[in-house]
Image (cartoon, rainbow, N blue to C red; front, side, top):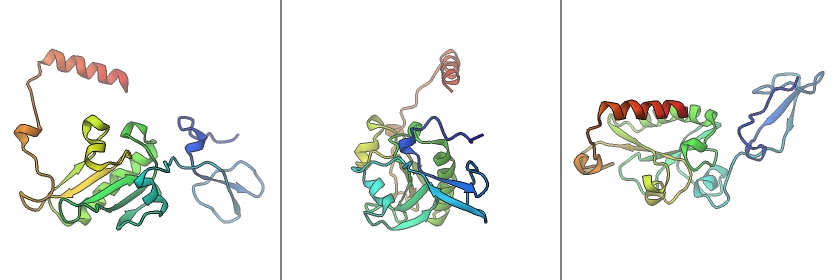
Length: 188
């Protein structure tokens, strides 16, 4: 039986290798153990030729790399708001978190933790925007999922927010919270 390949992602957006034992044509392995041969398959990782971050992932545009895994790349922001301001991106072109395959999401969390620690700052913001209304394109001009790790060492550097103006909290009645939670659970 052939193991299934992700069915929720079009084959044109996958990248990978088939590892085949000499005696079997359908064995899949995460790495190439002794006695196997690696056969490249034509699936490609999702990428956008017009995307700045995809070009950085491909090496076509240089970056000050801080950390890298198979699915994640972290590099210094070239217009930092504080020292150590870093962009952490998936090596998969996705506009929003909802567009990302789970294996990329699973990989990016530990990367965020490692990069945040590497800044040396005890306090920092992790910022991720999804869509134009959420300032994804307005602040970065890049329509590719990315997380900003922004060290905060003084009140003036890093992300500067006025909580009263930037966080318009309002009272919610319990019935509305129950209805919202129920609606959200039904979508998961």
